[in-house]
Amino acid sequence: MKISDMIEAAIREALADCGGCAQIQRNELASQVGCAPSQINYVITTRFSGKNGYIVESRRGGGGCIVITRMNLPKSGYISYVMEQLGNSLSYQDAQLLIAELQKRSYLSEREAALIITPLADQYLNYEPPERNRVRCSLFKNMLAALLSGGQQNNS
Image (cartoon, rainbow, N blue to C red; front, side, top):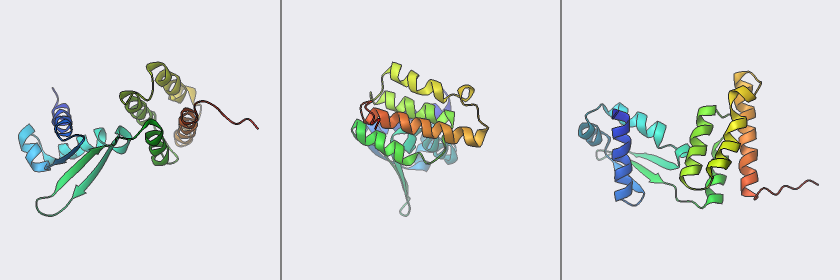
């Protein structure tokens, strides 16, 4: 098992033990797992971000800690949150992460996920990279909006 997977497993276990909100002492976890504290930061940044359904805050002073909270929002609240956080650009990798999180939460079926991710692939977006990511983001936001509206659109 890779170090990053071990760190993720330890954090997920802490979250499960604490009902979805855990305080992590970075140095303590690093010595527990046998890694550098910077590796803890890397795992938190890549696997426990808002895109992955978590809120992360760093608390300074008194030894400091990192508080990780799993967002427990209903489907419409979570999808709205994702849409607000997207900005104007989205990489294919980030789109995959977001769709995987929506599936984990049972907000998307496997079929819906496939229907959404397929047209977001680089091979289907015939634009240069900066524009491609903007178009991908716009398409993704529109698909999420369709999910929120139950697929009903106003054609007037």
